[in-house]
Amino acid sequence: AEDAMLAGNMQRWKQFANTIKLRILLRQSELTDTETTTYIDQQLDALAGAQFVDFNVTINPGYNATNANRQNPFYGAYGYTINGQETGNRSLVTASLHAANELNNTADPRRSRLFTTTGGLVVGIEQGADSGAAADNPSFLGPAIIPVPVSGNASVGSSMSGYVMTLSEAKFILAEAAYRYPAKFGGYDAQTLFTEGIQASFTRLGVTPAAGATYLANIDSIDGYGWNGSANKIEAIMTQKWIAVMNVHAIESWIDYVRTGFPETPLALTNGGVGKPKRLMYPASEYISNTSNVPAQTSATVFATGPFWSE
Image 1: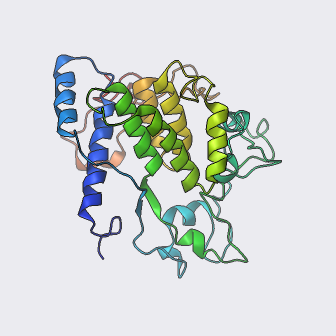
Image 2: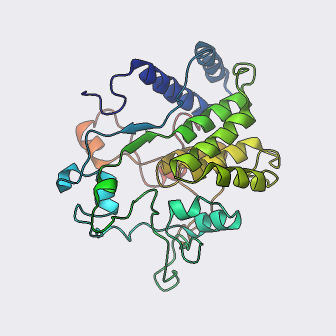
């Protein structure tokens, strides 16, 4: 009863642990030095025959709408109050123009669940654009992310679980492993896992399986999106993973980009040509509480060097 994630189910904890381990091993997959590749081979061999996440890993210690402190914290910050009123941050997060174009151009049925739409389309703002250039009716977080209160009742959103790892992310992790290391993951088919990752995203967002099947058929021949049409299967995996974790675990897409170069996204207008950051900055609290161990860092270094798995 004290386990707010997996209710004491140790088999599921082991599956989750195996999947987390595989994820961090894949983060090192672009490295070529002998020490790292030997280590990865040994660790992948240790995972042979292991069980991985086959469910959405969620957390819910009892979120509800009885008072503001018991709401799902994300919903309370970016959605609605317990009385069904929009929070001040409800209109803070909008769709980027790039994300809007990608979803609209492929007629992705998930778009109306990921974002609010106008005329069935996601309306995005180019990152870095000022208010004068931004669209007047941008799309905000959609009903699958921020459920809209019904008659002022915000209990559905307030009580929703948080996602620690989605099933779709786990499927794409396995798809990448199966594609990169077929000799070690011979029991898996990368294309099947790729398809299952997309389908799991449709299910989580409340889109019908039939719509998912139609989408899969429509994008199959599109380079960078569908399996058969993509010359670079890693690009297809990362792009679909980016869509699947959108509005939930976007940091995973950033990490994927740092190590693989995918998904490809444009620089913000205000970037100034310095490129994308390769690492996060240590917070001030780290310098205060862990002074002797935290490396010296400037804003320039985040664009120069990556973490251990990307150098």
